[in-house]
Image (tube, rainbow, N blue to C red; front, side, top):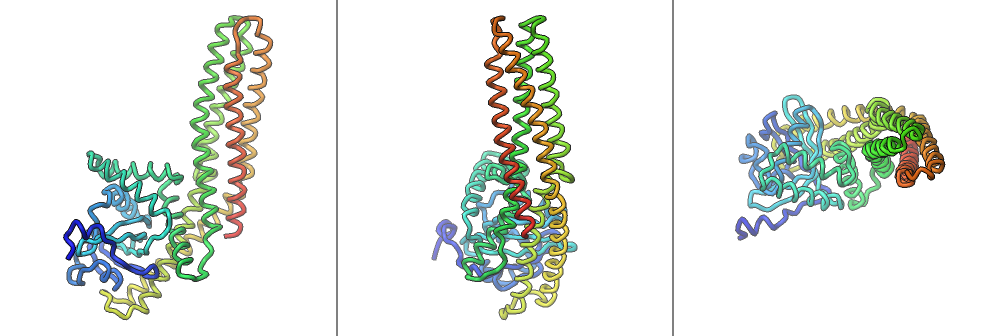
Length: 400
């Protein structure tokens, strides 16, 4: 027999085709579950029913993950996450869990994760555990989780859970040998939309550098006295246009109603809801085939699952319709960006010309001109990338 330390190193086996189900009240107390949940947990039903769901929580799970989880579901947001659970004998098992607010409680469906994303998330969780051991609160740990996911390329938790669930379901279907739903194009649209948001957020910080360059121009102008008036005017115009660009990024490009930020949110929401609906529907069908004694009214649980799945399919369609409308505005946003970049480029050229006329003064604008060249080149590269990503979003959303 394994001791507790040895047991924690052993994984509980279960099939990739199996789905866990449990339902709790608003406090997280278990009210129902299916046979997979009972078997893998290792507890008899009399220990599970009326017990808090944290009974199966593995001690190695970061508290910040559950803090974020509860904050979201208490606000009525369906939420997905990688979770390591513990069986009654101390062994562990990983699941990807989708938790759905339902009336005064919650229901959860869980599958075996098999994609590479699990390994990446394990690394993030390990860092969270280290920080928590050093004194970070669950709230602070949750913030670190968001930061860790951002470093993996997910601009929001909604983005992460949507792409993670779709990826896991896609891997699962491939391993089960079924055709299933083609999630590749929807995943491509979500990733491209996320990359646009990341690129635009990066451009915001770049314009802080543009304002610093404008300040350097003003300093150079002051050294030139009367001869520096044209340089001063160039500095003022460059700063004005850079500030205009920041305002446009904040009020238009990244706005969740009219800008790229809205596309990223809509794509992620639609992707998560559609895949959650698929999983809930599969769980509903599994209840009809569950010959072992699941705890609770199987017909009632199946009806609940089917009802939520139908609701989510409708909400996902609304998101898809909104995404299509937002994607249609991509070209106009890109045209506006090009206009701003072209105006900045014109001022850069004026700086180069003025620098050539002032060479005899002994005050060189060459270094500042090189800074402007580098800034303009980088902005140009980012604009090309955003243009390409915008085209990907338009193409992928038209096919999903």
